[in-house]
Image 1 (spheres, rainbow, N blue to C red):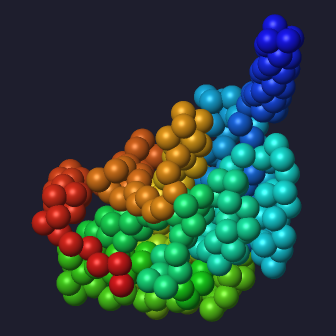
Image 2: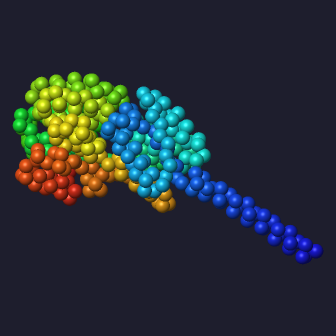
Image 3: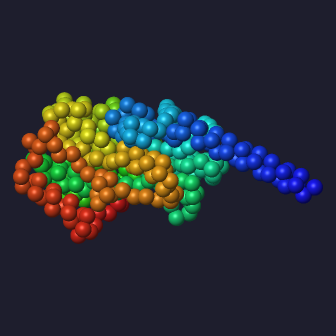
Length: 340
């Protein structure tokens, strides 16, 4: 009787062990063991040659170097952000979901709470004192004001008319960081310079209206500005057209945008959205994902400016030396750049 009971226990243990092993294998074999990432683009979508394309570059790097799979959704006008995020969240094979842009903040927070077993990431998440960030959500921030300070200093040092411009896509707290940093950089090196400011829209449509941006740029150039910096996503194409037409300078944003108007792009403020996407996936793949807030600034090489063979002819040795000094002072906190 004792032997019979013992055999029953052993048999049940082996059966349970077999079930557990099968379940583990099934989990490990999902997508052939590969991590799958979902990403929803911001307004303007892929092909904006700026913010969205930078995020896509990060996905491609993760695919090439980490072997991940990915799926992207372009919500078009942007009204379907919530449904696009939810569409990815209900898929069993999607492990991590990105929302690219501050306008995702409310939707991605809601869905992260609805799907606590999924990992969510929001690029340019809007941090507030009232809304708690779920533990399965990573809010990625950048110190855009620091990178913008540097390109503002470039504009202030190189302008010949002492008049420079700025074009923002949408009047929002995020884009105001670009404007503020740029203005501070201009005034730091050239206190007498005049800054002209224009915004395409008060809504997210301002990131996909090149004609309006071109109109603003032509107006600023017409009033004497010889350098204009933009933070307007796809709308920036209008600025580059205006720079070509007037033979004046533009400053790009997010990616190196020299190719959009060769010889007319003075520099670009680099915002390493690509690296943020890649590093977040890399940390997740190695088991080091942690929700909360992460911020990339000049010290972390999360922002910066382009200086290479394409644009070096515009920079004198004196300007280069001054920029290096300013960059060091920002990193050492000898220059405190305000984000407002």
